[in-house]
Length: 147
Image (cartoon, rainbow, N blue to C red):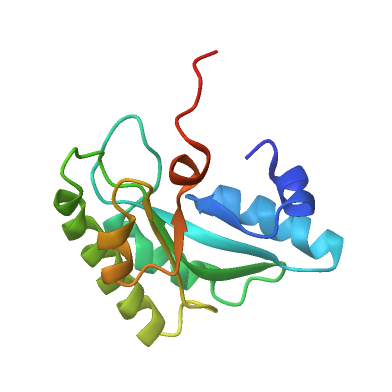
């Protein structure tokens, strides 16, 4: 959240919106810049301490609070499920996010149709469950080198 102003100016899409406070900061930055910040709400479906996101039960109320917020455009949802050696085990998380997305879309709480889910090791299951954005850097560039 302390880099919201810079993120709003530098990035085409913020995929990690996870609180009303961050949403307010991004909206303020978007309004000042004269163009709305495009964002995805990151949803925490696994409760892992190492990952962030809005708890599932808070999603619809937060989206309702953000509806029509000047300087911010909520285009969809994002999830980071637990890492599983067997990619098929991530499918229930992808399906849950798609169902949440469908509910939010039906309620008019999203301004776009994006579903960001799936990484290099499990993107096939994510696409089958409706992903519109996948993060496949490792498949393209290879494993990161340790610093």
